Image 1 (tube, rainbow, N blue to C red):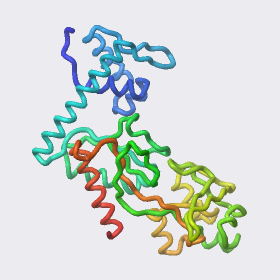
Image 2 (cartoon, rainbow, N blue to C red; image 1 turned 90 degrees about the horizontal axis):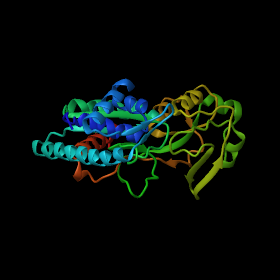
Image 3 (tube, one colour; image 1 turned 120 degrees about the horizontal axis):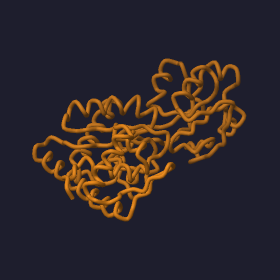
Image 4 (cartoon, one colour; image 1 turned 180 degrees about the vertical axis):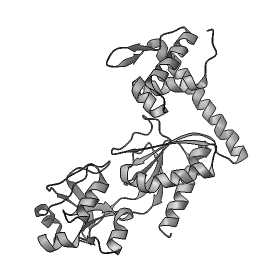
Length: 301
């Protein structure tokens, strides 16, 4: 080994292995694919081993690469623990934090709070990403997921940040033209706006009413994977939508939308989900605590 190993090159190695390619790793790291390839090449030259077998379609980690990867992950974990320990003594959290959330809630609610986090704790290096799917935070290397929905895997730890429900609503013009549903079964004959979004089972709405949880299959001429688009359609009078109160309450208050079958709702609380206890990570703990404070303040709790 002729050249010293850079910690950042180890981080590049771990990211390439986790993402399964140079281009995907480059996108996550904010680098060019050529630069990622160059750093892996420098690491291979310094160690004197081949870390990846490259082809035109994919890369495969070598046996030597697997061994180096295990050591790299241990080294990076120790560095992160060191930064946490020092920051706890300084009472100033520092280091990298990867946070994810859903499209709509992430963009409209979480993103501004993440910006506040960065300003309050300048030692944090925050990467924030939004998805239209449920993220495996352990497999994909996230420290924190701000998630809507109460179905949380038992191996994860969660703290409720805000109470929330999804409700049925529509524009007054739609109801004037198509009638007001009287029962949950009536939704089958209405133009509904299904959303394929994270934990939503597409085309199936599970709602809780006076007689417990009930399920109804819905369909319509429009569907999407983006809640904001469905809400825009609902405002235009295109159909009935199932959306979170955090999103539609202002529209209900000003009469743009009205509740449909108000005796029904779907529990969809807001959670901070993380893979390890908060006592083990000062940086994740301050993120969760600030999110909880800010979201409670927004709801007037």
